[in-house]
Amino acid sequence: MLNEKIKSLRKQRGFTQEELAIRLNVVRQTISKWEKGLSVPDAEMLIKIADFFEVTTSELLGGSVQSSANETEQNEISQQLARINEQLAIKNRRSRIIWKVILGIIIAVVVFNIFMIVISMVSFNNFNDSLNTTITQTYEETIPIE
Image 1 (cartoon, helix red, strand yellow):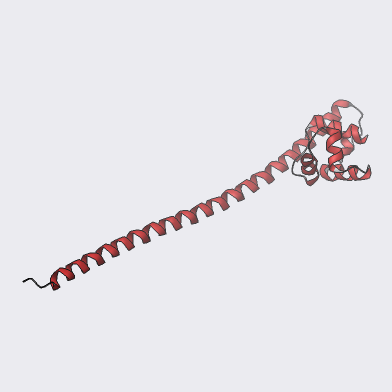
Image 2: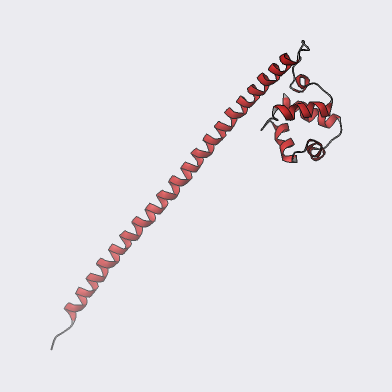
């Protein structure tokens, strides 16, 4: 919706992301995030973008507002921005949950491996100590005393 509109307007006007970013005083990555739908511009930036492309903010958001009343247009814009922000928040929340689960699994595997190494070292040391004790006892028994 908004991301596609920004991208199509930019391409229609023949601008690169870098050129648009310079004209709007943002970094190129910001333009890229807008066009990919990973973030949305705030209301002030939305107005700047609409002015730059010489379209109304409602056109930029993909809707058409029949009333020319400024307040009605602002309400529509804020509602659409709120919906977009909510969708992004849900998407980001899901992404964070997935990464937390992956991180938890990795930590569990590492802790399990460390635990197994400690157990094997303790077992090896116990076996080694018992082997040394047996050899010492056997050695003492076979020495002839004169």
